Length: 246
Length: 294
Image 1 (cartoon, each protein chain N blue to C red):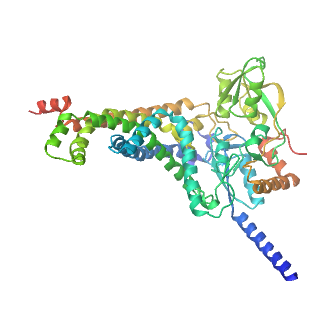
Image 2: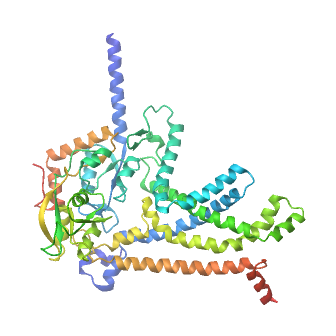
C-alpha cells in the first residue's frame, strides 16, 4: 500500500515536471495592431514598439514563456485569435462584456481608463454632431448609443485625421491615446467635454479554452502590480498624469 | 543607413529625405513591392492553369466532371472577392490543420471546436507555433496565392471555355476528316488556335488581378497599400525621429504611378503577344497580317 502511494507520488511529480518543462518551452504568439501609440506602434526601424511590447516581453519573462509578436489588422484581431493564428491579444483592448462573450481576459494591466473627446474648436456639439471613432471599439459603441452621428474608421490615426480635415466634429478615443496627439498638435486640437469612464481597463485577450495560459499571465501581471514595476512602466509611456494602480 | 543619419533633427532638405527614405520601416515598404510582384508571378500562371483545367472540366464528356467545372466557374465568379477572401482562407487554413490533426494526433480526446475556438493539437498547427515568423508569413503568402489562383482561375476558365468554342467549326471538322481522335484534335487543333480568342479576355483578367493585389492586406499580408497608409500617417516627434504631417497623398501617388506604369507595361506586352498569336490564324487579324506580308 505504502509502496503504491509512493509510486503514485513519484508519477505525479514526474507528470508535474513534464508539464513544467512543456510550458517552459511553449511558444506564445502575441497579436497586436501596431497602430495605437503609445500602446503599440511600428517604430522607425520597422519593429513593434510601445508600452505593450515592453510589458508583454516582461510578462513572458516572468511567466517563463517564449514570445513572438505578430501584427494583425484590428478588424480581424479576434477572429484570428479564436481560429488559432496567435495565442493572445495585447492591443489596447478594453475588457468589455461583449468581448468577454467571445474571448476571455486576464486581469487588467491598465486601470479602467477615461475616454475623451478631442476637437478642433471648443464649441462643437458632442450630443448631435459627427463623432469619429475606431470600428469595433468601446468608444464606437458608446457614440452609437448616444444621439451623435458615428463616423467609423479602421485605424485610430484616421479618426484624428477626420477631425483635422473637418470630416468629423470630434474624435472619441482612449485618453491615453489622445494626450500625445493633443500635445503635439501645437494648439490645433483640444480636449472638449467631460471624460467618460468606459470598460474595465485593458487586459490580455486569450481564447476561452486557454485557462492555464490565462492564469499564468494573470499571475505575472499580479506580480508586476505588487512590486510596482507595472506602475513605473505606465508612467514611462503615458506620463505622470496617467492613472496608475493603487 | 548612412552615417550622417544619426541625428535626424539636425538635418534638412535632401539629406533629411535620404535618411527618411532609408529607415528600416521604409525597407519593409520597398520589400512589399517585391511581394506584390512575386504574388503576380506565381498567381498568374497558377490561375491560368486553374482556368485551363476548369474549362477542360466544363466541356468534359463525363457528366460529374462537367458539373464540377461549371459549378466552379459560376460559384466562384458569383461570390464577391472580399467575402471569398475573408471566408475561404480561414476555412482553407482550418481544413489543412484539421486534416493534419486527424493524421498526427489520433489520440486527442478533446473536441476541436469549443465554442468559438478552433483547437487542434499543437503538432497539427500549420506552421507550428514554435516556427519562426518568416515561416508563418510564407505560409500566409502561399494561402493567398492559392486563393488568388482559385478566384482568378474561375474567370480565366470562363474565358478559355468561350475561346475553345470560338475556334471555327471548319477547323475541327477538318481534323475529324483526317481521322484525329477527340483528344488529338483537342490538343493539336483547338488548343493552339484558341489562345488568340482567349487573349483579350485573359488580358482583362490579368489587369484586374494586378489591381486586386491590395486584397492581400485582408489576409494579413502587409502589402504596399498597407505600408503606404502606415508610413503616410502623421508622425509626431514623440514616437519617431522623422516627424511629418499627413503624407498619405504622396505615398498613394507613388502607388498610383507604380500601378499605372505596370499596367502600361502589361498592355504593351499583351499587344505584341496578340500580334504574334494572330500569325497564320483564320481570323480577320491573321488575314490582315497575311496580306501585308505579301
